[in-house]
Length: 355
Ligand code: CP3
Image (cartoon, rainbow, N blue to C red):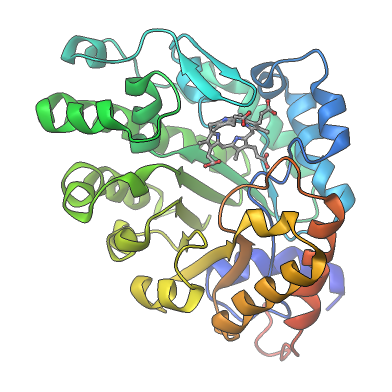
């Protein structure tokens, strides 16, 4: 079996908790402003323009793979792309994030959201995926924002520290909230199914801001929709990854949502997070991205402690606990990939290896 073949397999194998020759590694936001060539590609173009032009989205996806030996590619896009595609007036401001012109504040606003038809609304995403599959030697991860995180942008009108309007809305208008989650959940499921049909080999659902909720509210207002999404994707062969930030207290509930992999941030030590999730589900994480701005010796020590906590159990995908920060030195990520691969190299019995 050639090294290439193993390299192409190890990310998907780890998601399924199968034996791997090395712990796979990729980085959330691995295409981004820390790469000079990404800044060049973005010159004179908005983020949404890049996302809507398959050749540019393909190029942005490939940039990090030319720099380092990551074990997966993630489609270059944004969680707000399908939301804009159903007619919500929004822009993505550099250094700020998504800003929605007319936030959702009433039952009527929820009613006016129309369903997503991926083939007609986001053909450029599906075309980018098809083009990428011709170029890539590692698996391609598709993704979507989770209903809570999308709802937060739609209701707050932009990024928010406390998500107070969102929480007030879910408690004041539980029926409207349920309708909103139902509509967004249907859209996310259709979008991810279309990405898998176009060739995405794994999918990640980013519930970046759901850690703002307590477990009772998560259980009542979020979990049912997440279950429907992961159940709906269950019959397909693509592993499902479920990621959130600040979710320490929610991990057992996120496990119940039914993904194959749970992505965790750095706030809970990896072995503790894994215990809360259960060792029969794979885990992704969890180096603090801010540590990558420190000298290499510090990065190395923290990365090795993540690996020690994973303890060579099947089902660890190394990643940061959140996206790569813009000031991260490219060299630090390159060295991290090498470190993870070197320190986790293990003989893979031919009998265990899938042909
Ligand atoms: O590897 C990759 O870069 C994949 C592409 C990707 C982007 N956004 C491109 C992008 C992915 C996976 C996302 C997901 C996304 N978008 C999330 C979930 C992940 C997370 O960070 O929690 C969220 C919450 C968003 C919404 C969003 N879009 C934010 C908060 C921002 C940052 C604003 C800023 O400028 O700091 C964006 C903009 C954005 N999306 C950038 C990129 C590369 C950076 C700005 C730019 O290039 O214009």
